Image 1 (cartoon, rainbow, N blue to C red):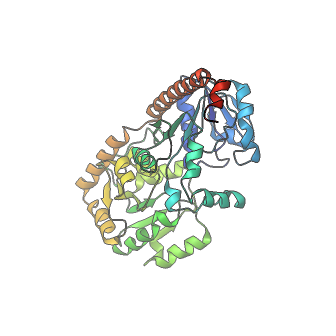
Image 2 (cartoon, rainbow, N blue to C red):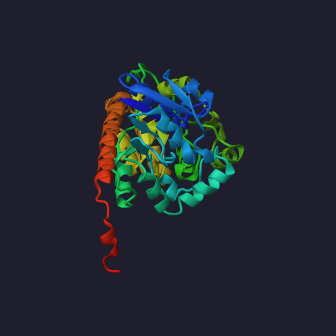
Image 3 (cartoon, rainbow, N blue to C red):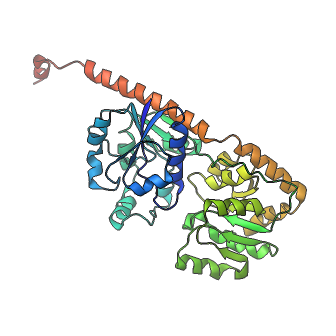
Length: 378
């Protein structure tokens, strides 16, 4: 199958969630399929697999309205986009669009790296569901990364198209923690610092964990850093890394007591699976998506209760409890892989081809009104 994959959402310096999701799917698909990537900046190729690519406009450009004209000339069997915003006017190919989550309807702050006009449109877009419906119904199949999001899509009647699961997965790693090896009292947080991430409760819980140090790994603005520092009972036990490499992240996971994430809402929660894949226990807020991702392996807590968070962490001071959580996480993470996700995407592509063909045939066989039919009732 000749799959044209829209890789224009790949970052040029480091992967974010969408960027890594697309790059990982491309690599897994390319093992068996003829994959060609769409890119909008040659620098994106440094973070993408070594497969053929075509340079086109940015997905944020006004030219995106007409990108299907260029794609038509490439004659793909199917086109896959890891977002839902791809231009499709005049397309002559099957199309799979992806909706990762609905989190921005409840938390409408747009990603800061977007240009100001795009951020304003983003806010307007998420004031109602009908713009989302218009975009998704332009596809033949809509992919999503979790059953939780699929259920929300059905609840809000976001599309008439088939919705199929194409899951996320951790990066492959050969390193596995020894449950009996010594570990540091470090606690890790990997994620943004947007309000719904609820990092404040995590910082407050540290006042009840005097033996532990909290490592906040992601990039953070000076203003947000100051806000969180002011909440800390002991700022010496709050370490701001300001971003880490993949290798540094893996080293920290292999040394720490646990990874913590207390989001009040979430699109997926990839750090949960990343931690479990190394054998690092996870303490997570008790919300539906984390239950889906973490299964029975995570320690679930009330995201508004610092004492509940601290109690879960203290339970891991017991070597037997820590080892059991480590083994459960490894088993849970083993059910996720990019090979499985790629096979799910192949199924979505086949369904898109079928749906596209069916609609084209239906359009060709639709009866043409006769002149006398138009005169009836006049």
